Image 1: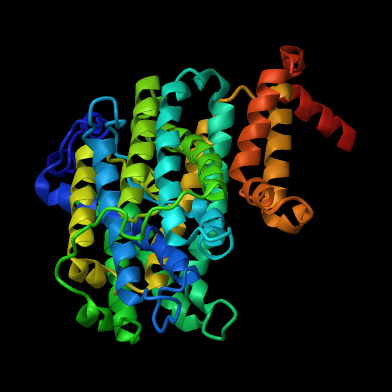
Image 2 (image 1 turned 60 degrees about the vertical axis):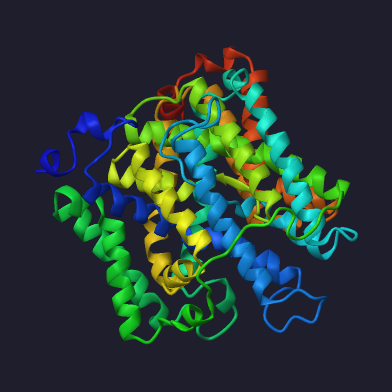
Length: 467
């Protein structure tokens, strides 16, 4: 049945295969739903830090500017995704990679608009443009540095990405970040729709076949949405306030050079590039059962930088490949880049027509949380799958143990670095940078002589010790 309605297993693993439109379009929209809240949330956070939300008395900025930033994040997420799926010369991996606004840059962006001198949104968006250009230039070297990124490193990075996201999934399901600290956060009323999404997704995935099984996350979110509507959690008020069309304007927030912001954006671009290597590897491994090529990694890095620079020019925030969609590909098994192209076109529509974005935004955050719990977990699973290709000798176990222990420990206890400069605190407690740096350095520095003792010998020694 699956081969009749969707495609053969060989076709589903082919990035150039296009499923029937009746399948491809819903799957593309499912990709958008998987990343929608995560894509617009950074804009809401940064806009709030800049004082441009409701009731703002800081300058002449008000709600229309927050709406503009949100719309630009959707519009340029779609455009950057097209860079990845369709390609533009060397730009783009031509893989089903979904681009979106990066959470990783938030610790740099909030001080930029609220604390780093007088940067404000003008300095921030200018820094984003420069950081995007720097990110693009990394693409010329990323392929040559591939030797330093074996499955041990990329698998660890993907695993750390997943581990850093699972907390967000639980926060969404429990009611979202705005409710943390209130009685409503974690209430049964929040968890019921989220759990409906989880159980419906799992039930449909494992007990149905064909398109229904492939679209399990989308169907789960729809069921959760219906339950949330019955429980009175769906609010259509934003539809009345949203307009019908929005025109992007270059340097909407102004132009200003702020070197602190620029340096911060360039540092984070390195992290984003490493994350993209992990995401591309996760997509090819989870969707096609192979390693990513140098051309795909270079093209993906080019698209990351080009999308960020172009978006920053019009007031959007930094773009990166979205890890939750890596998990979605692993769940659906559909590797088609054209499926993601339909999702990109839908994102562009959302960016140009605020009414469409407002309609999608009626999906409660706890409903989306139920969906991303499954997908964020799949990101961790993809990282573990990549690590399965590692020769687990003593040398590689030491590298993995030290990198995971330090990076995850700093992420869980950021106050351990409270005496370092703020920028270093942000970079080192991200989880991704220390994991990548430690794994890469140890992999290049430790001698192969450590490999002489195998995992079995170590396990045997531990068992003997216990006896």
